[in-house]
Image (tube, rainbow, N blue to C red; front, top):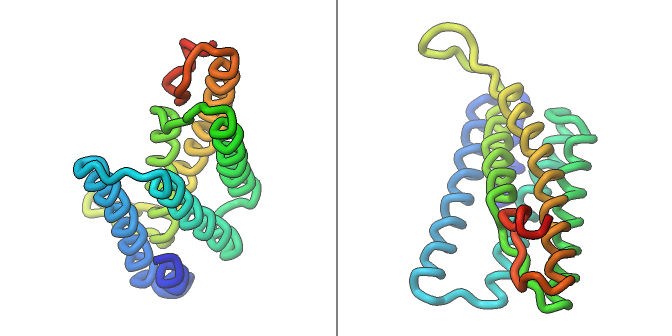
Length: 184
């Protein structure tokens, strides 16, 4: 779904922005449905645990880079968000090598939620007249959500790291950012 979404990113056509956002949210919804069905039917595989988050990251990274190139968000923000993703991916590989599983915790899930809402709003881009009067400035709202996502990204990376270090010390075999209190 990445190419059709990127093709719809357009600074001159508000309708294309809404379509890009709709496709992005449909892709996310299908991803949630796929994961739910896999867990419900006991079809969770090692490949799925690897490929599904990778596909999600590729979609988010492609959109962040493209939207930055379009001038819709500051490059430093994308550097923070992408840097965290690369760091966590590397940490997961190290953890796997040590027999430790790093699962998504509350901080990582919150980061993802803010990121998805932020990207969706930035895809819409244009301000729209609100039914109650005034304007809804989607690009500004999206950036606000992405700034919160950046803070949550750094926080969850720190807590994942602390949990991983604690796991290496033999305190636990599974790490998430929910484990901060146990690990800290």
